Image (cartoon, rainbow, N blue to C red; front, side):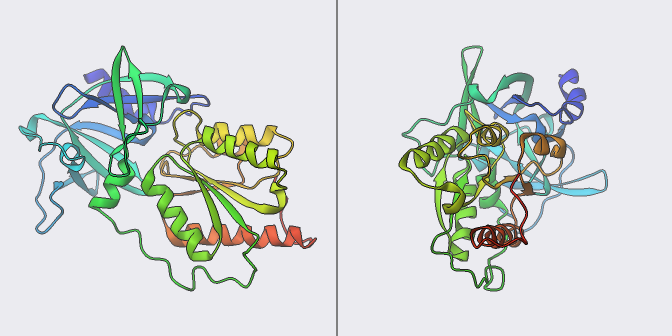
Length: 319
């Protein structure tokens, strides 16, 4: 256990091009869960917690750590399970999601495992939008479930802000504009679609990079000129089967797709590898989730795309 705890922070600094590392844990029962080590700042035995009046029932208190006050959530409660008992002997996984630091109380932390995104699979088709499951994988013949943490955070601490008319104002005709939205989180897909709908741009949704790439190829097969019709691709990075890095690389290698504008939209705000973004050829990234930042980035690309379609010269080339 000490080795796991000592190495978590160091491992979060590693930038893997084709794989990922999962921190395995449980919620007091035998079922294993996993979280990308890139999201983990540290793992600690549960510190003293201070209760907060009128807080969400999942928030069991706040901890004062390294000059920060962070909320600590019972992850078992958050996904519909029983509350964890014997809290002082449990562990807190301190994470950074969507520009904020928070802690998740878990039963125990087991180990770190190396895998790749091809081994991370979407949840079974029978799993509905109400599920907290975003992906699954197998480790030593045991099922590992990956929780949709973004859904948990939205339900417990929804303070994302609202779109305003000023955020989405544009004088460009949007009828011939389209956006491909790629994210394995149901919540994240809806958040991005809310922005595109607010702007007035039509969109297509994909659950992972593989599904998105297949959709792009299908459009090419249909004869669509994607350089004119598809304004941009907004893609998450962490996704089963094909992640956002691999999707971007595949797009850049395909003659009919290579000029597409790709914006990576990720919750990996604290450890995001800018060099890797440049290497795979993404046009940019913004950390999740701020509707103003996202709408601004999309509208900027709308203007550039329109300038290109009009034959204007004051736009940036996509590559």
